[in-house]
Image (cartoon, rainbow, N blue to C red; front, side, top):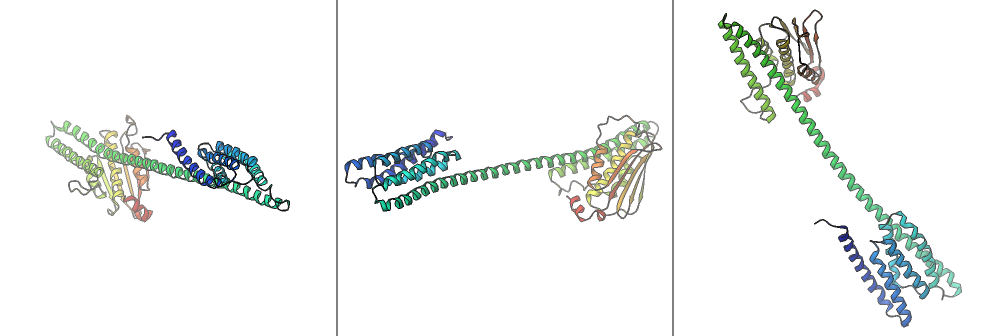
Length: 403
């Protein structure tokens, strides 16, 4: 059940009423031994009123201070000695400092000044004249010090509790902010992972489907004239489809974290570029210079995807009579990839919704390389990529690329 304000205040009143009762019993017991009946009665009533002020010390501290003031004034005018109930005064003053804002100091100052003067003066009026000033001064200083210390103690406890509450709120806010940041980072990571998977699927399926379309159109045209060539084209279509299925399975396996499964092969590498070009179309020639180096999987996959995307764009946009050349140079400090064609790719109708070039740029940028793609001066289209070798970028890049 939710705690209400009234239930909290009720418990507070009960606790303070119990404190008032204990103080009344403790302070009225000595008063009962006063021999003069009238003096004892007056002292009992004023003491009882001063103890009753404790009931409201937390709910209404200023009201409690007012009750103590009335009881103190009655003691000053009717009694000639300090009563034990005066112990309630520092408790009430402490409560004003503890449970009221700094504005509670305004009534405490006149109360402390007047009470510290009036009480000692009334208590020492029966002393000899030679000792009256000294005794009054000592009592005035003592009363003022008690009132001041009680109020300052209340203020200190109030500030301490407020600071502790503020610290808890700050810790809670930091924890909440950290949770929000963690959730945002998780969402960003998921977004990046989805983008990478989408790019992988695009590179695999776009190339494979382009090869299948080209081979299917060729097979259709050669069915009547050269059946053996049509049969060969259908074989290429079937082989390309199987490889595409394997690649899609590999990507799905990586998404599931099933990297140990023997059913799926590793990611494409540099050594598979000749097979990729040969399976694409006989209008594409390949020129490789240098020995195939051993590079991190991420670098080999990037080079493979660049050739794959460039040949895919050639098959889709260059035209049926165009030819292309894929040049791969393995140097000591970088890998140079150039794909040129003499087609009409720059002039072909395109819906502008493809993400192949953007994906290539992201891959090359992630490897620390450069990419240029655009029409050639003499006609056709050209894609040039330079991928730095790990030895050029340092060990930190190798760690980053292996993730």
